[in-house]
Each structure stands twice: as C-alpha cells, then as structure tokens.
Length: 356
Image (tube, rainbow, N blue to C red; front, side, top):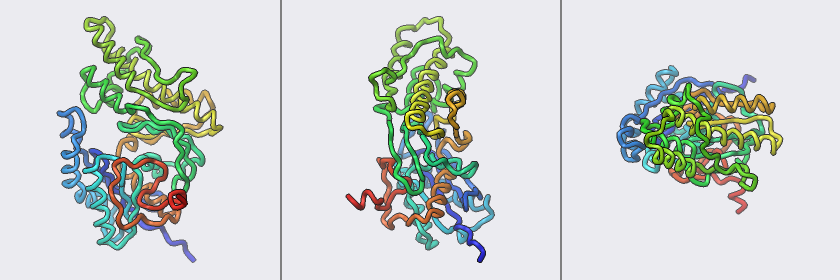
C-alpha cells in the first residue's frame, strides 16, 4: 500500500516582536510569512511587551493567509497546528497560543505546544539533513545562552551542560551597543561596525574562563560593565570606536566558541550546532568554523534568515513531533512565559514528570 504523507503542519511564532507563520510537511517548507514590529520598539531601545502584543494581534491572521497563499493551500489543508507556548513575553505568547487553539479547534486538528528554544534547534531542518544524535548545541540569543546535549529532539530529554548566570550574549550586545551609541537592535549594529577593525586592540575580560571556573557556564554582565567603565575612563581616547567594538565582540565570541568546543571534546561528540539570533553574527560564525575545523568537529549553523525568530522553526519542530508519533498537547495548553527547556514539547506530561 502507498505510504500516506504526513499532514501539513502550520507553525505560529509570537514569543517576542516577530509574528511568524509557516507550513511544513515531511520536512519540506511549503510557505511562510513574517511580520516584525521591531521598528516600533527602536525608539525605546528595547521591546515593549504591550506594543509587541498589539502588533501580533494585527499580524497573525494576515500572516496565516500569506503563508497559505505562498504554499498554494487553503486552511482546509492544515492537518496540525504547532505554536510557541513559551518562553517569551507573556502578552505576546498569549496571542499566538490563542490563535493556534482557535485554528486547531475550528479545523478539528491536533495542537502541539512547543518550546521556543527547541524551535531554534529545529530551525534548519527544512534546509538540511536531520540533526545528529547526539549533538552539542549552543543557543545564543537575546534572552538565553546555553550549552546543551541533545539526542532525539522529538523524544529525548534535553540536558543542560551550562547556562548564563546573568546577561545572555544577545542582551550583552544590546546593552554595550547602547553604551557605544549604536542603534537598537545592538547585535547587528555591533557586527556591522566591527568589520575591518582590530579585535585585539583592547584586552577585554573573558568571563568564567579560569581554571577553577565552571567550564560550561557563562557570565556576560561583568564584560558589559568592563566596556562601560573603559568608555567612561577614556573620553578622549585615541583608540578608534571600531576597534573598541571589535574587541568587545571578540571577547564574547571567544568565550562562546571555546566553551562549545570544550563541551564537544569532553563529551566525545563530534557535532556542534549553534542557533539563536546571535548565531547570525559573522565573527561568531567565522571563529566557530575555524575552531571546529582545527578540532575535527562538524559545525552546523542555520542560514542567517533562520537564526532570528520565525514561523519555519516552529512548523519544522511540529512536523518532527507529528512524524515521531508524539501525542498532541493538552486542550488546556496555556502560555508559559518562563518555560524551562527540558523537552521540545510543552503542554504534555513527559515520562519523568509522570513518574514524579
């Protein structure tokens, strides 16, 4: 008998300031749409939750229609709905979860609540091969910096090797960019300004890299403060601003890549996956490639357009869950702004939780 194709999975992402919708079936991207409210937040130097939520309300239905149109499909073709249930801004998440539950109910299809960061891990499944099992994963974004050991993403628990003790790497980029007079969002601005400048001009600290420090933990608050104190102490410095920016960026990516490579070696895992918004940084990508090549480690980083928040990563993860035979999330699925990453799916009782 012919093999029945998997259902079309619609993914909805509204955790922060991007409204993303995509349609995936059997690992193939059929259509997508993305709307961002970033320009509305720029004047405030950061995301304003209520502005983001209102933008999601206005954008989610048009994005669903645009994604369906791009795929040449209708709502009746949707066989399952996946949605970011957490973590993220509470008001923003509520919009996406409510919309997803409404579509799933109206279409009488299963609903899969997924973890936003697990979505990042699945970001390029539609562009490349299945994820290695196991793989060391480095998540670097505006709100999270974590080193993980990942097995079967759809079935296995996700093991944290280390996390940030304070500021995430992306948050540090934003705050230092503000100190240096660069526009929001800080990450892309720092990346652009650092190009062609000297990353060795200033010896900014490499936090938590001493012999007695935890090998996989991160801390960027002190680095942020070190840059601010240097700027305050050198108002008339002859060091070009570009060199200051490049030196700061080098400190961040040096720590990130060194700890990721160490995790691969210590755990004897030959594959490294780097995801999240900061994974779009050109220097991080270059240094990771250089160090992985020297260490004989296979590096995987999504295309830049897949690093920032988007609906494709949520649809791809939902498609993976459906094809793995995962049970849908509970009908009372709710937004979980502070959800911890230990499984890809939210709104279900995982085996460890049931045993407890």
